[in-house]
Length: 321
Image (cartoon, rainbow, N blue to C red):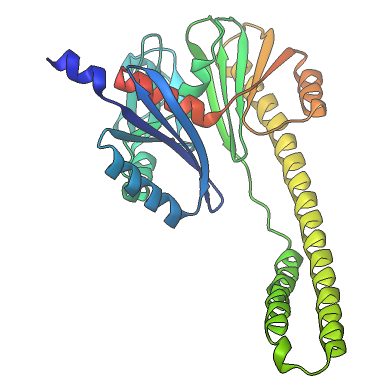
């Protein structure tokens, strides 16, 4: 009977993460493990809450998942508590997830705070980004895997092919936005001039001179041209700012990789690394990859990934559907 019911049940899986003030969201509907549909969205907080409410009403079998990128987490190549003590990790302050070949730990305080902040979203699963990286393990010994995102990077180093020997995570430092962008945004408010044109056209019968109408419309069109020019300037400045942030993040990532590998050699293993895998959710430059190769003297492979796809894949495994 239960098998027959399960045959008809559809699950809704919603994965999300936050970038600045936007929620990047993916919704998939699955039945018996098969994805029937997939949609991607970008929401404000209020829009996201409304979206979740509607999704729960449409299907009570709805599960929400995200990732936690706090610094106080990592991997240990054992589930044995003595290994944690050996590494100087206080067992009273962490939560441990024991997996087949290794374990993931996270600070209890950070985890509880994160859960508290997410209560309004009714989150079912909070995954470590280390799980996302381990999903892409190609069974290659003496290798590192780096997950590069817009807000953080995560690194795993494997001495043997099955379990990570070293882990590290880094959140990018934020830079102040250009105030001139906010100042120029005031020009956009002048778009009300477009409505003024419509009002003038509707009042044609009340205006005696058609020439006056033409002059007024030409003046308004000139205003619109000025506004469009201002908007173009804003877009250009935002593009420049994005380039600056991307360059800054790439520089910080290279330093992060170098310091992590140094720490690995000094404190964890004398096995030399041979290859590195860069998994990226946002675009990276060829110069970035080349610089990593030059700084690490390793063969670097790269692969485009989708964070939301990976989060929902983990949810599927948790549901065992």
